[in-house]
Image (tube, rainbow, N blue to C red; front, side, top):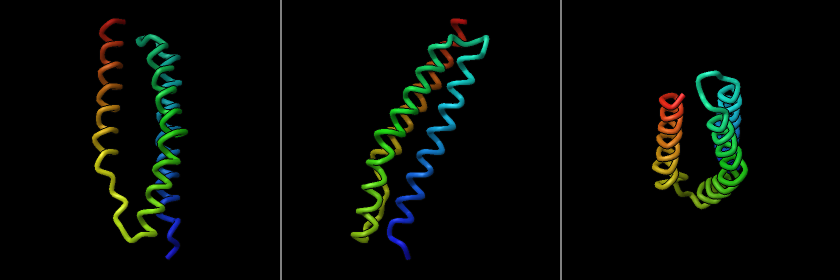
Length: 98
């Protein structure tokens, strides 16, 4: 089994999710019911996440798999949950203000 395959799949999933989120942000900037800054904010957050957290996660998963440990992150899931909730609240606030 290739030790780097799991880390690479994780990194590719991060990239795919980040790019999809950036596309949603771009679509939000063209919408009529939301202010464009919400879409720009979403694109910036997704871009920074892909650029900063993606490579860090890749390295951690790679080292964990090579050491025979589980690559499960106990901080990543709550952190991602907080970000998603914040984005949903921001979009909801934008809809209410529009």
